[in-house]
Length: 186
Image (cartoon, rainbow, N blue to C red; front, side, top):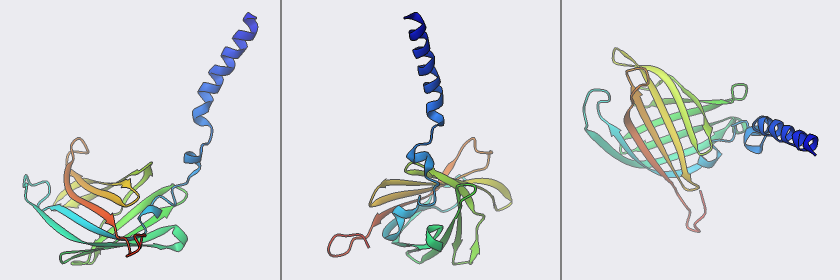
């Protein structure tokens, strides 16, 4: 009896150790469809810190529309944001080998793509990072996307000039899905 109990204990221990290594549905997902929830038209409310990393606390607010369209059979999408005179686009591209996304943004006032932020989703939260320049300083950029529910999501951008020890939030957008007259998604 003691031998059987010992074997059962060893089997249980091995199973406990190996369980996290076994593939699950979530682990099998390669991330290519992480942005599928966002395809469509959204009303957006944006708050932007006017002078990031300057000690300023002056924010501006904008309202507008965001339209997200798939490209390349779902391996990417294009985001168009128009809010109170601000026009920006983002081209998001999926790298299946790295299982990560690159988010490439341009403010159409200058038409220049920023350094892409790179990252992935973990559940309903995506985190994307880059190193950029703000004026003469090298900074880190963190862009977070949170799917709050099927019809709402939140975007946050923060900068760090101390290697990521502290982060200053400088962009917040809350998007709400636009429904047609029948109450269905666009």
